[in-house]
Image (cartoon, rainbow, N blue to C red; front, side):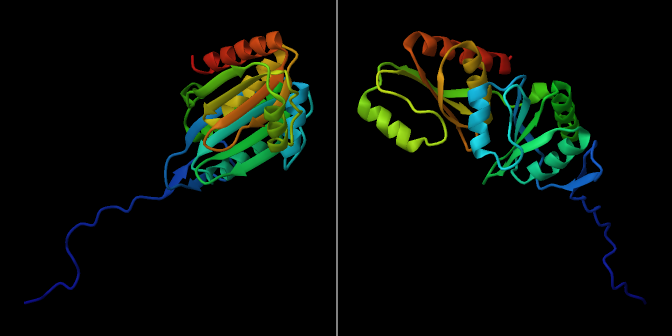
Length: 236
């Protein structure tokens, strides 16, 4: 009588931890979970104040007013490294910013030519196996216009926000909070296009995006309307 020392039961095939991405010179990426496209924000022409503000936080190439810009936000955060590689190899775009947070990753691409930016963006979404239309929706968690800011309020806002322009007492202030964070950029850009406002603060990373604009009452009203129209377009 003979005895088998091995287990005769069939062993299930071990699932590979490599998920193939297209459009990259490195064809595979190790993933713990599927990549989520939280935000895809294309800005056709960066307005002067927003471009200057983004330049204060940029760790890469500085944006120039009139540049086209693509802002991407994904989860998990470390996936942004592979997506950055794909975007930079797809065209001649410049990398302005790459942020890896606790839960999310973000990157900013710039180029004078809109088609170059769109080409890199398409390469990224193709590699992810998704489309721009399947990006995350923009949820507005807070929006408000505060009129005739008091001197004490203006001083504290200016002390807390040292990268943008200053708000003066007596100005009206438009504040906006969104989820995902990146969508405040299109709100800021379209608001600046529409009226003569002051960009005080734009935070496009983190769990929530936060935007603060200031100006005369009528200008702030128009900026608010333009920002909300831009968000409506995102959610269509």
